[in-house]
Length: 83
Image 1 (cartoon, rainbow, N blue to C red):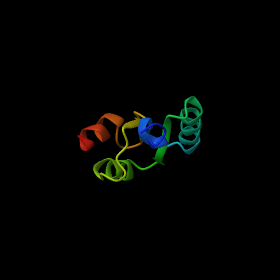
Image 2 (cartoon, one colour):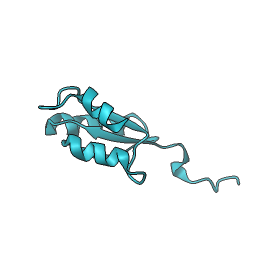
Image 3 (cartoon, helix red, strand yellow):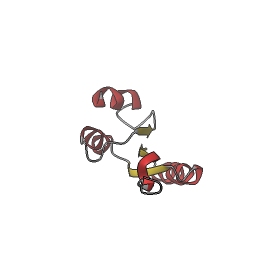
């Protein structure tokens, strides 16, 4: 083995949902700056898109970071729809 392990083995895949584009960009930048082991795999301002990504095995993140007030739907509602 020694050195043949993929670099992405310990990477935490993160999806980010926020309906405020400035907050979305800031959150993604902060997460990316925290560690090389954190990777933003997608970000969106759309709850429907986030739910779709979370239900798809190819785009499902390990962690979802989301705003709790999304204009018409709450973050808790999004989590319920994903579960």
